[in-house]
Length: 299
Image (cartoon, rainbow, N blue to C red; front, side, top):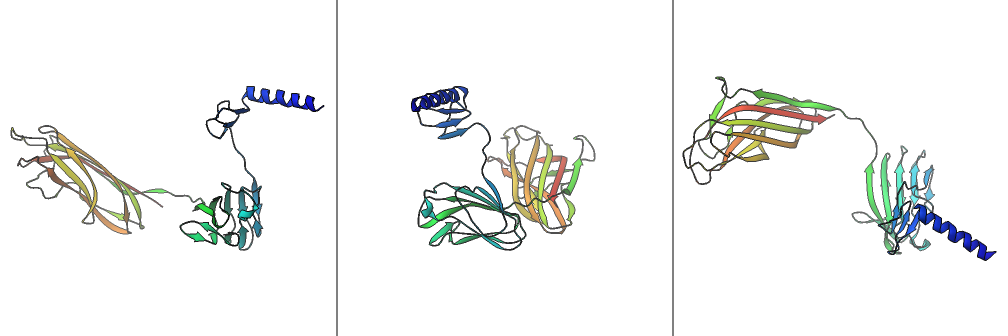
C-alpha cells in the first residue's frame, strides 16, 4: 500500500511540473505557475495573505498578515516575542480604520527600530504601519518599514497664474531690449501680477521666445544667455542657460519649478543675463516674441 501511495505522489509531482503549476530548477528556486523560476520563490499570479479585523487589544500570531483595527476605544496591538521561533523576515501590515489611537507594542525586553529604538509605535486614525522581524532575539527585534497617512481626500487643481504675450517678429509694436553689460536685465512684457487666495505650493511653467535683432561682428562666437524667474523681487534660482548658435537666431527658454507662496498678491518677471561672451564684447539686441506663464495649485 505504501508503495502505491508513493507511485501516485510521483505521478502527481510529474504532472504538476509538466503543466507549470509547480517547478524547481538546479538553483533550488521554486516556481508556482511557472516553469522557470528566477528567484528563490517565483509566483506567476496573485498572492493572498490573511486579512483580519480586530476591535480590541490583540497579540499578533503566526497566521496574521494584514490586521485592521476598527474598535470604539484606544487599543494596543502586541507583537509576538522573538522567542516564539524563527520570525526573521515576517511582515505585519497594520491599519487603523477607527477614530481612536492604536499603539503597536514590542514584547518585553525587545524594541522596534525606526529612526531610533522604540518600545512602541503609535498609529493614529487613518494611518497604516508596516513592520518586519529582523531575526534577532534580543534588543531591536522589529523594524518599522513605513508609517503613513492612508486617508484619501479629494483635491481640485486650480489656476494660480495664466498669462500669455505674443507678437510677430516684424510687427512695429514688438518690444525690444539690449544687454549692454553682464548685469541681469528685465525682459519686457514678462512682468505681471497675480493673487493667491490661499497659501500653497504653486507648480509654475514658463516659456519665453526671443529673436536676435542685430548683426554681430565677424568675431561672433555663439554666446550663452541665462534666464531666471523672479518672484516678488527675489531671484528664485530657477533658471535655464541657452546658447545662441548663429547670427540673429532665436532663443527659447523653458523653465519649471514649485514655489511655496503665501496668500495675497505676488509679482513675477524674468531676468536675462549675458552669461558667457566667450571673451568677446558686443551689445546684443533682442525682440520679445512670446512670454507664457502657467501656474496651478491644489486645493
